[in-house]
Image (cartoon, rainbow, N blue to C red; front, top):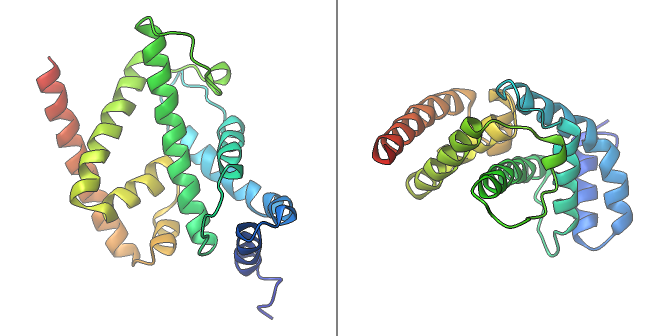
Length: 196
């Protein structure tokens, strides 16, 4: 039976209840999505360069802190929820890199929520910031490819999961992922050659 025992439908039902202001829905939702979010964060963090020790748990907790602040937000379904979480992971990682860069350049004491559990090399921070800049340019040209990069790179989703979230075929996701990566690498190389 596909009733409320179907996890995907249960998540969607709880998201809609939360959207309507039912705070107990968020409490019920948390254990249903926590393991999946943690798995996504672990996959994302496993791709980090050596020396970057941002913990998946810290990343997920920061995502939750930001999610709780969402008001009057329309949740479509489980897939939409995980897509938003991937975007939040992107923002968190980029914000941390920007903050560390600011502090290294003599910036004022900014409150960094993840710095205690994050040790990243300056090279990694710059690469992440270059990627963020290139993604901003890609978003102006092709939002679908940008979404695929967010879900795959920042959210840690597989090709199949990305296809489900975006309601695309896996072939389309693989093709767009490959094209986006090539475009981003060229854009980042181009940006670095101007910085030298």
